[in-house]
Structure formats: C-alpha cells, structure tokens
Length: 547
Image 1 (cartoon, one colour):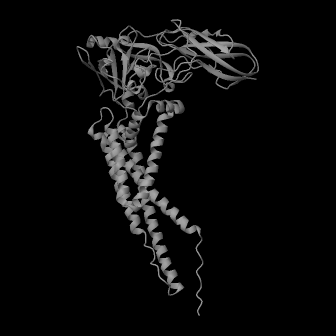
Image 2 (cartoon, helix red, strand yellow):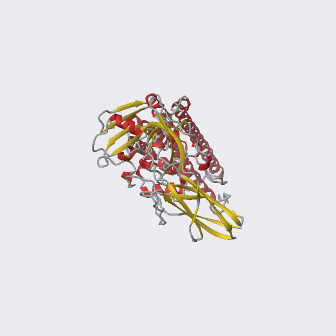
Image 3 (spheres, rainbow, N blue to C red):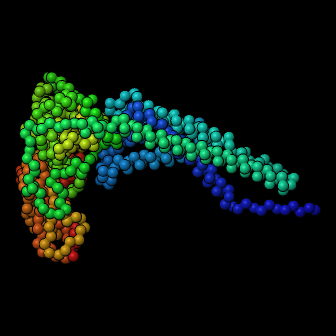
C-alpha cells in the first residue's frame, strides 16, 4: 500500500479572511459607484445651479420635511454648524446605502443598479419640490442616477467575469502534483482578477472625486458674485447718522462690542448653499393687494433716498442667554414709502417677502406702516450686504424676530392677508406675529469662570426691540435684586449694555442671575419657555467660582 503525503491543512482563518475581503470588495464597488454618481451630479449642476446638486437638493427637502422640534434640537445642539451636520449625515447615509447596493450588485447586478436609479429619482423629486424649481433642476440628480447605475453594473459584471469558478470536486486526485498545479492556477487567476477589479474600482473613485470637486469649484466660480458685490458703490445716506458714542459700551473686558462686526453677525437660515445674485440681474417685484404693482432694479433702489438705521436683530431660535442676536448699522430705502407708492388696498394686513431660494416671511402690514423705520437694506456697517446676510437686498423691520421681518436675498414683496397665506415658519407652527420678547444675558464673567475674591465686574446686554430697556437688575445666590448701571440709551430699536460691580465677592461657588424691564414697565418673566413657538423666556444665569 502506497502512502501519499497529506497536504497541510490551510489555516482556519483563511476562508474567513477571504469572505471579509469579498464583502469589502463588493461594498467598495457600491461606494465607487456612489462617488461617480455624485461627481456626475456636481458636473451637471454647473449648467443649472448649485442648489440643484443632488445632495443639496435632498438636504433642502429634508430641512423642509423635518419636524419643528427636531429642527430646534439641531439648532440648539449644533448651533451654526447644523447644516454641516445635516450634510455629513446625508453623505454618511448615502455611503452606507451605497455599500449595501454594492453587496447586492455583485449577486444581482440589475438590482444593485436599480438602487442607484432610485437615488437619482429621489434627488430629482427633491429638486423639483423646491419653490420656483424648473424642469432642468432635476437634471443633475437624473445624471447622477444614470452614472451610478451604469458604474455599479459595469464593476459588478467585471468582478463576475474575472472571478474564476471553483475547481470541480473529484473523488480522488491522481497525484499531489496535479492538485497543487491546478490550485496554483486558480489562485493566480483569482489574484489577477482581484487586481483588475481593484484597479477599476480605485480608478472610478478617483475619477468620481475629481469630477465632484471640479464640478463644485466650476459651479462656485460661475455663479460667484464677489466681483459684482465689490463693484457696488453705496450712495451717501440722505441723513447720515453720527458714529455710536463711546457711552453706549461699558469698558468691561470680555463684553461684546456695541456694534457687531459683519464677520461675527449670527446666521440662522435654511439655505444649504448661499443664493448668489448678481445685482445687475436683480429686480424686486411688489404686487398683490396694491393699485400700482412695481418692479424695481438695483440701480433704481440705490437712487432712492437711502436711510441709516441702527438696529438689534435677534433670532426666535435663540435660547435664554444665547448668541443669536446682533446690532448693526443698516443702510437702505424706506420700505413704507415704496409701499405707499404702490398703493396698498384696504383690507390688506400682511406683507410677505419672498427670497430667491423660495423662503417666505410674513410681517404685520400695519407695523410696517406705523412709523417705525422699516428698510429694504442694501448695506450693513458701511459695506454692501455680505452674501451670507442677503446680498443684494434684504428687509429689516424693527420689533420682530428675523423669521417674521428679515427676508434675505429678497426678490418679491406681496401685499396680502393673514387669512390668505401662511408663510414658511407659520405653516410649521411658529407664532404668526413674532414680536421680540424682553431678554437679557450675562457675558462677564463667562460661565464657570474662576474669579478672585473681592470686587467682581458683572456685565452683559439686554434688549426689548422697539420698546426699549428701562432697567436691568442682578442678584447673587437668590438674594435681593440690585440695580445694574445702564450704558447710554441709543433708542428703543437697539440693545442696551449694562454693568454691575459685585462688591466683596466671597470665596466659593455662586450663581448670578439677571433680568430686564422694558420701557413699558413689563419685567422679564422668570418662567422658562423654549424658543418654540414664540421665543424663549426666562432669566439668564451663570455659575462662577470665587477663589
């Protein structure tokens, strides 16, 4: 009896590693197809506009469909980074679904390709759901779907062609040499096939990424309005305001400046990509319940008698003590004069501003016409509006939160009624009027700061827009309220800064609270309320450690 040598058993980990490698390779096919799809979508968006890019279209639709409590959670948790978090979540979700589509494609290529087709269909629907959308807006998503499907199909079929069939089972091998030779041949063929698929997948990744980045850069350059904004020559206002006096700002280190620099002015909106409007192409339409509908170009607007307005604007999403408030010097045309020129009809009670991106904001018409200095602003702090803050034109109406008064990228004003139309935020449950609530905050010392024992400076800001602030009080550890020193009063439409010298602060942990009283004598309420649906209420407090 001849004893044949027994081949050494393969390590038990090899089959598992091969399965993992096959799974990762299939997932990589799906991811490569997704990158190629997004690259195609970005290139197609070059011809249509940045907001038609697939991810932007889906993200914008997601914002509109997100329940209000979830939106508020995002703003509260992520602040001004909420849009980056949303886009990151979309990309992550797409990556996971693309990997699953790749696993499906290597088994059923047509089914895997269909997943990418469905992605494209979803993006096309999202693009067409945007206000003012045109048929061409769905083209980038359709292109992405087609490219993704074709890429997944091609890579999956390449993988199937280059993967050798397993050796047929036999009852017995003639010799160990023949078995080894056959196995080596299969291994070599498999290795060559894997390299081919890996090379094709990597090349697809690279091409898709290059197309995506290149498409985004080209689109940004094509629609860039930096040069047009820089070319704007602002007229001298009809009645220039004097510079803000130094008495408006207590000299306490760490306290916010009285006038907020443009770069630090808060931004809260739903725009995933900033509307870019060339002022040479801009026109404002005034229509609805008016006798004489108007269309005003940017040059015509600049020829109006322009006014300056110092004004504190705040966001309804601002939590007690939050950062979404700022003061700036606006320059613009008087909105009431333009409306009276158009001839407002009896019965109208709402002015709806429409943004270039479809946002609608409704303001009580009687408040616009009651004598307050409402503007169509073209500049802030002496320069043309930054793109992020509404270039070339936005509305400003003192006394209201931004969601009912400040339409950025304004292209249309409609005189209507509250009964006839619900603006964007009202449809989502927010208060229809949006009157600013009295608010105050402690800025110095910072939360959880450590300060030396003795006299401690406490300072902050209070506002009750269009009513004015009459008093600010501070208390420590629930003790009696003490009057803070108010800076000079610049008018009811501006915040008022304050300071308080805490005498003989003893060592330990202490809680400082603040409250304000408006010019009508109403004291800021203690009870906490969330921003939704009409703005936050409650006393701001901070905890410090005296050492």
